Image (tube, rainbow, N blue to C red; front, side, top):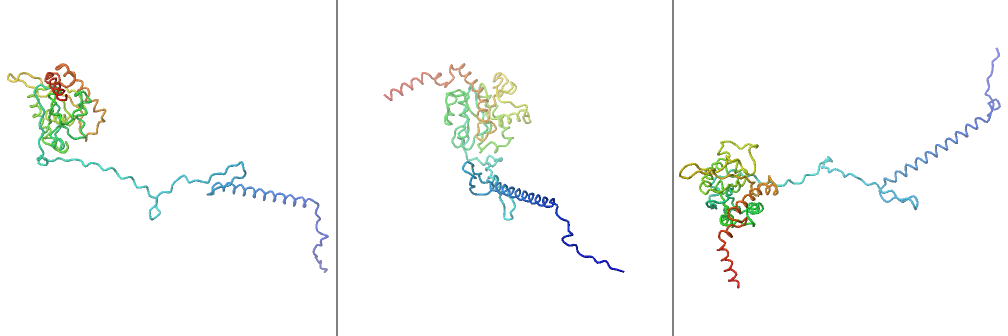
Amino acid sequence: MARTRRTRSSAADAPQDDGQATSDRDELQTDGDAVKGAASTATAGFKTSLARFQYGEVQPNNGDAKATPPHQPTRKRPLTDSNDTPTAPSPSPAKRRRPSSRYAPPSTYAHLPKLTDILEPNLICIFVGTNPGIRTATAGHAYAHPSNSFWKLLHASGCTDVRLRPENDVDLPKWYAMGNTNIVERPSKDAAELSKSEMAAGTPILEEKVRRYRPEAVCIVGKGIWEAVWRWRHKRELKKHEFKWGWQDEKERMGGVEGEDDGEWAGAPVYVTSSTSGLSASLKPAEKEAIWRPFGEWVKGRRRERFGTEGRVDRVVDGQAAETEEVEAEAAIQ
């Protein structure tokens, strides 16, 4: 049996290029060059964009183009502790508050002198404060603390034609037909050192003063004072809707008397104004003036009716004496 011997095909037996293969290779070469060109362009564009975020000065591409400013961080890094844990900035120290006062027994300020009432019969009005402060008791004159706005509001409202000083409290009856007293006699640092019971207990004493001197009106200098009077009279707290600034109801008159010996007297009407203490900050100065002003207008009107003047009464009542004093003063100067 004859064997068939296989031999490798020679180059002559291989298929010949017909030109199509050459064309395909040229096309692939062209595509490769295009891909490389695109990649090179993309790389150059990325590097150009990246240059915007580099620190330092970036040179312009040409004479007309402007350099892109370096990237600037817009957020600060948070504070960190030793463990690299972000922490919030420490807050500013809180403002120190004045410690609140508590009740102080009378013995605490027993060494201070008592303040004398400035009262006379038939005045146009009397002012009722809470009690003398330490500065007032030491000075011996009403509302003597510099932060107290009593004398300022007295002038701003029209009760006086000039701003008086605490030392002029003794001249109030003679100059303006007005007087001054308090619902509690003993001094203290502030009203918080008084008890509600002793403030309420001062009401009958106040009523007796009004009954004795019979002023045309009583001016309560502070809401807390009127609340104390209310507690004594009605045996309960004053409700929010029951309180009002200014003139109170007719039934709330003070010092009224009945009887044949003293004669009938309905009592003095009551006007409630804001507190003048420097510690009272619940109302703005303009609001306090608005509360005081109607009473000042009323006082001026009554002074005009009684004495023919809105200013100092002694210039009218003692006009001859005042004129003589001025003449003597002028003569002494000459």
